[in-house]
Image (cartoon, rainbow, N blue to C red):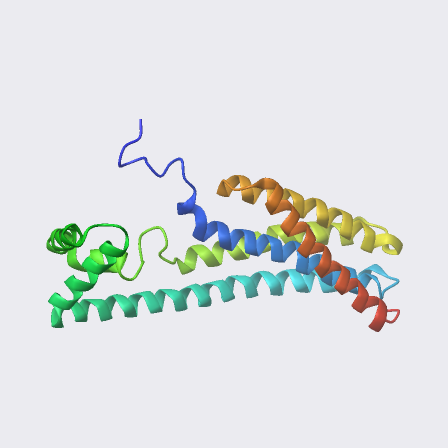
Length: 233
């Protein structure tokens, strides 16, 4: 039975923040580390430089993803907090104007003018700031940014995604390593696309096709760079 407490259980939007960061991290880990390894492998006849580049890329990439995600999401959080403070100040200085704006928002959503104004008044009496934050600024519990969660999800997912290319560079024959990397990377991307689509409740086929196409382009360009500019190392 659907109630106010469990109505979101059959939806997936509440997973969007951490899932976005995790998919971005895993996708970046798989593609960037594989592309890096392929680029070096096409210009190398020994395993050591390939392995060194892969390990360095994995460590630097994971830390960079976590730091970048934290900084970017923190910036979003700062903007949200600043807007909330600005809205709080506006409610003190011009409550009537803010009430009018709120009524117009509800009217644009389909309510009659009188009904919209009445809804705006009742919600303002109940929780003026919370109502304006949600309906005027579009900030709610689901969409609100979480820097720590995003940083951890992105960094951990990058590390997990980058481990497969690392294992390939450890055990695959050097002469054909780029082919092993490409094959295992495509397989990893297919799995990632399916898992992310399943977790988010979206189309698996569309997610897999999208992630495989862009992954193939990235690895193909990296291999081309290795062939064009590479020397035996």
